[in-house]
Image (cartoon, rainbow over all chains, first blue to last red; front, side, top):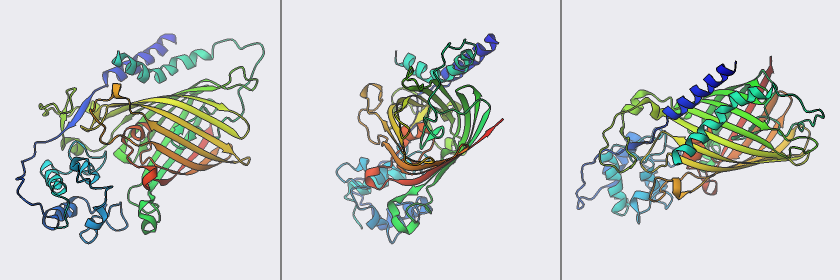
Length: 126
Length: 310
């Protein structure tokens, strides 16, 4: 019986030790964005929300409401946007590759770069 | 050294299988100082375990549910009708005296978790043992589809910003671990408190995250009628630079605060509460909770347990 107990312990120890990794979700390389190119909220960011976010983030769904009629007023607060440190903005961190919240939809690197550029340009309702 | 500490923290709860069995063969003390009666009403205190383990061969079924946060107000009935709810169904079985094993499945990330809980010491009525000491361990497997994992690239190096980031998926990336030591005391018929420390490890995290996290835990109940109690728990993921892999914390997990009401009978416990964490398994709460109780990040949740003896 004692041998059986030690066998169980040994298996538990080996399984635990062998299964311990330190892996990271890596970011894809995104195509660089022309700094002079203005990113439009209505033409670029809203379609991106509609394509990726509004199935959950809609009226009566998970906040913020990202449908076209509500998106700007819902996210233009310091909770979601930090124009001083665009990369710290929750609206970006929640969906950026390698940074997104667990279980949350992740944008492609190019889409995330557009979102970041829009925030960096002042997050205008343009 | 770090690896040895992590190894010991992860393995310690599972050693209970061997030691709990050995306990039964020891001769009894001539004068018995029996354990205190009902230090807790169930094995759950909202999001934490307690020292209470039912008698040997008891099967426990548990339903844990968390609704969406209250931030949308009445538009989704303060989260009750929100899309972001989470639920876990679990079964626990008492293999030996004071030793329970369990399995559960959670909606968020389709976690399959396997747990072991061992109450090493029980507080006694004559106060020879003034506190209870409990060890708890959970190993979870992220059960999301392979397509989810195939859609990402991985970095196996120790540096999250390492340029060589084209490594492939490996199954161990789905695993996570949680180990906890809890010390509790029933101060009176009305008041019981427990405090603890925990270690969490995820095999795969985002670039901005940490693989390891040490946490502190506090919980308690205040019994105001024979069947009803006010309960709370407070879990804090600690910011410890020595074990962090980040130069700065961008999305450090938020603390989990929960306050609730417990109603119990001999075979049932029902707890309803308002709390912050959207995750249910402890490692998810300690590493990924981004709900902030100071910013409408609270959600209604409940725990129901049912016991059967064999």
